[in-house]
Image (cartoon, rainbow, N blue to C red; front, top):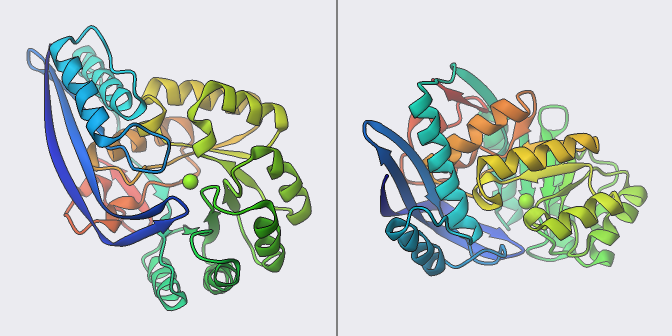
Length: 315
Ligand SMILES: [Mg+2]
């Protein structure tokens, strides 16, 4: 098996501000594996602040794998990319093909200024997105309350509004903000605080559906979330969870616990987006997934990952 690595940089139209910091570009390692006339592709792109290896560490791990293809990388982003490439290679060797299909995706809004939130949410609704995810907990609580109200006024009955705090609120801040917006229609709040033992109480007090995302990165944390009944939704990111196989396992555990599954990009490049799209079609074809992120890049990504009227299409 021949493994090839290629670096690539993707540029965001405007910085995405989350509780983990601001992101303006994505450094991606594109992976291709080849056996004879068959190919499989994957991608590794760690992002600082999300508990992954650094870009350097991912690159080193993948270079070691190139030298010794029997030893898969162990760090999460590198492993996810390698496992994705191998799964698609196996698929190609079997001569299988996937039918054309499409899946609903959400728009991601991470602007901090109220005016920008208003503009970006209005644009997303006009473009036909069925859901909008607003990043929160990166500024202060009064700004968040105003940002959420502005977004909710626009999305009201036209699109779902989802919030993602990336664990950035304290318990008090989460309660303060979520109570202030209790009358708004909100589909979901992801990772409201750092500690999942808070989440059930937050949900009880506010009536909101809680999503787990960053906390799904380790077996012990997943067990704890299930034990605490802390989350109603699992947001699964195949590009950090170890690739398609691990994502499927986690989705079936979620299913056993009546937990909704959404698939999400990690501001991925086109290869990982495509793999996430295929998983979303396989695991939860009727949900709205976090896969509308190709629209955030200046770089022109391929058509089959670009959202059109709030959907992406496998051709
Ligand atoms: Mg999230």
